[in-house]
Length: 250
Image (tube, rainbow, N blue to C red; front, side, top):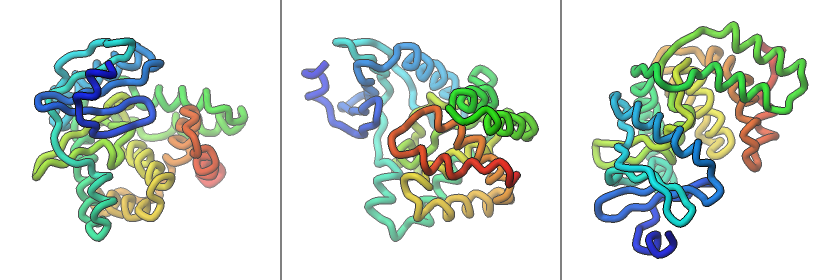
């Protein structure tokens, strides 16, 4: 695998994988300890989303080489929205509006073959390590929330949007589910609060203005989504996520 990788161009690097291009294909190569079932889960969900108007990458094959799993896609060209934001901060409003336009377009789709958002959030809360009383309150909030079946990406960050002229591609569908769009918005808002806090309110304002959704409605999802996120145990996130879990306010 090392010799193969040396012949490729590194496009993006994540906690669990790296993305490379050659002249014809894009390769998502996972860390050697990454679970096989998660690779195939991502491939399955992506294959289902391919059939929709969601600009998902097209899978060519899934294989293992020298102990590392790889998903091979048709070539994905362009620059990540994250890179565009960093390199051209003066255009931040344009880029945030682009992200929201893409995200709300995804929400117009339906895909009954993928996991339900509610079940994923329940699992995350139950395994968050929070005290039983807080878990109970959060699960009650989740159970009483409006039930929708919209396609939700589940991790739509600027890293996962590749822009090429007027076209774009949305990557990393492994967290996708069918559920409530505002919960999906809450997830992206939390990402901004952790990684680009100066743009978090701009993002939320853009979504609310574009869709007519109230901030209060999105904020009602924050404790639920933040608690479910704690389960992932990502470095540096716990304190920020914990600060969002204020069930008494809702």
